[in-house]
Image 1: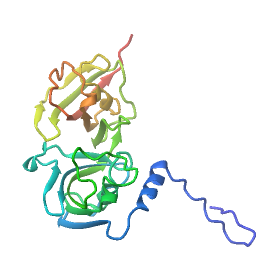
Image 2: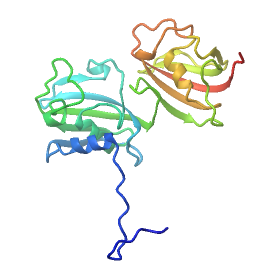
Image 3: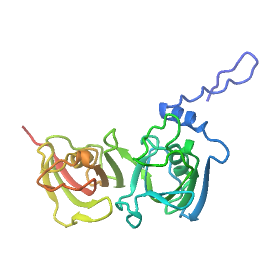
Length: 268
């Protein structure tokens, strides 16, 4: 390939790749790190050698403690939490600086303790997330993180209320839309793994746009190809009442395990 040559006979360097706004913001925040402000200790080693990258969804448990070991808050049921793991999409989700820098260092299954100075968690100047009520944001704290899973995510809703994980690629490029008729096998679980609608061999049949399934499920299926298998993570904002799920009380998040068997366009 030809390169432009300067007057001095030397090749000009290739133009620098333009950084995305997210990359520029991350670089700006990274300058707030100082020696000792963010420390990591591994409690349990993870598996493999892959670590989360931008665009990946990470799923994790988090327990926050004071330096004296007193638990401030936790996702774990045994520590007073709801038992529901946290989800973040790297480069998309708003999070404290210590998480943004710490998560990409972790392996799947790893448990690590991150010691953070206040300016690295909720006392950061212009922190993009607010501290929970009563949170000691001006104290040095320990964040115990268990990296349950991470994977390349398809962001379906810009507010991250609907996110898809492809389990098995489908066939072709066509995806369904309103008012396509859908045939799909669907299993529904809560965020802590409780089965709401069990798996069965018989497929469900419904039409997109007729409120026969929750809105978030429709949106997720609208990104799928024939024969694709996927998990669609849906927050309660997109859990609209439907004949598939008439009862939604108490559900903060639902995971739909989907096999898109077939879809056909309805002729008007």
